Image (cartoon, rainbow, N blue to C red; front, side):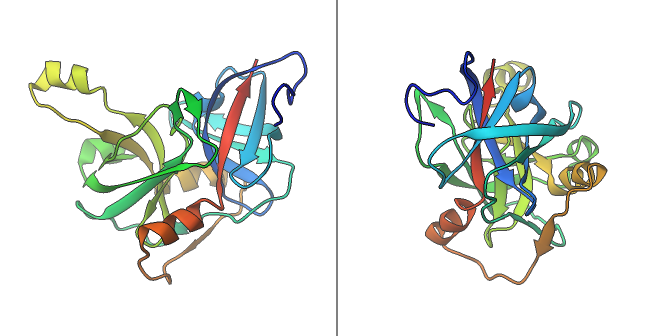
Length: 223
């Protein structure tokens, strides 16, 4: 989107988040709260010059998931880890478009580790926990393992002051992630064709960023 030019005349982008391509048909996965209340939705793939209109296909507030369809040229699509088997301490990375006053032109890439994966309450909720600095605008972005496979979707950052008040423990930089299996069941409801794999070797940070950069996009909420 060029400065001064609106994708939807008479409207402005009132918020933004992150999404990522999951099918060759232009489907992207993001959070429900990223698109909730939007009159129109736009998508800017990380390597595209500007935003283009997109259409909401379906959303689920309890899962905090939404699938939208982009009508521009579909770039590389994400692949899911198959099978999903994460352990505490495993390396993960988050890539997205966090807001730091100004939105970064390129997505921001941050690495961390799995904090809790098999904890029963989190599993029933379809979540797991990671140690990563989640920032506003990261919502809806992919969480990838050390081979570049998606293992979850960024949902929220733990409210650390509230957690300290309740527990007396300092818990900084903890993100709650929607599990891959919950996300895939959501996509199945809308007949979205996604792919998975387990053949890649571990990558260094640059290689992980270069791969994820291809399928991440900024989601615009207009009103």
